[in-house]
Image 1 (cartoon, helix red, strand yellow):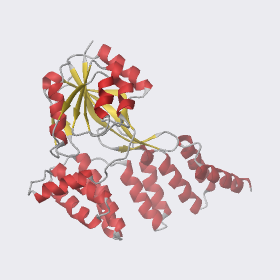
Image 2 (tube, one colour; image 1 turned 180 degrees about the vertical axis):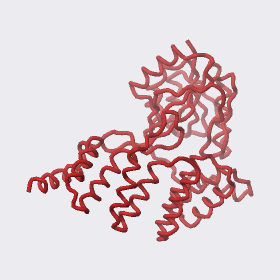
Image 3 (cartoon, one colour; image 1 turned 60 degrees about the vertical axis):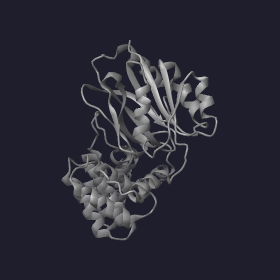
Image 4 (cartoon, helix red, strand yellow; image 1 turned 90 degrees about the vertical axis):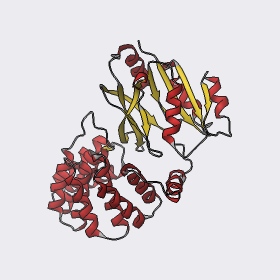
Length: 357
């Protein structure tokens, strides 16, 4: 059976660290906690779990801190998490099974990262991350913000999920890091440009975000998933500034990078819905339902775009065309995914009344 070091970087995580360690401490053989300047009880909490605690002077570089934590690990594999993550009971059992059965030839194990949930507890936003990596490979983190772990070799895609439970925090932190880098005259990588654009977008700085996103795409060096997501972000920016023509152009631009994603079919469907061209909207929403992400897909995945959302929009489209039986069937299909959704339940009652007349 393999042995595992858990590596964390933390700062003022007293509200969530105990929750995380309660979920994983018994699963790992070593806990490495790198503290970047806590002033609360974070270290005291880590000590209760027999963690090895190291101080690290913060230098506006997440990769530097994570690489320092990895360098302190001594076990066969390194498992990394953030303080506001947890492993739910089902995934704890899967992790134990993985430890007992993992082929030592595997260099990295990916796990789903569930980032957002609807009001019924269904996962709405997720991606895959390389979570468990062979220590002897000395894999390194890259990027000062929105860092990624550079891996290669034999990779296993597991069905284990890490669950993110957001605790809030400093929403300006990453934007400030990028701004300080600009002030120092540092050169941004294509990945830096994309995530800097995201920070500008999240802060409502849409024109600035557009300029940065265009610089990112112009490099021609972005990861395909970032390129596609960037087109969606550009479309959102242009919608926010009232430029519908460039919004549509940005959506269509995404099709030049890879096979279509359900999100962009839904965007096109909505474009035609707004024009009251319901037949064209139906065409695109029906296509969206046919797109399913691969099990090894590493990009962001919002399941709504290929499940309940196109069904709901098809219900609306068919209702506008007077095709109430088809509208009813698609509303029922949406209810399969969201059985307690009051809007869908109201639709059911309204459509059933029409069909009985």
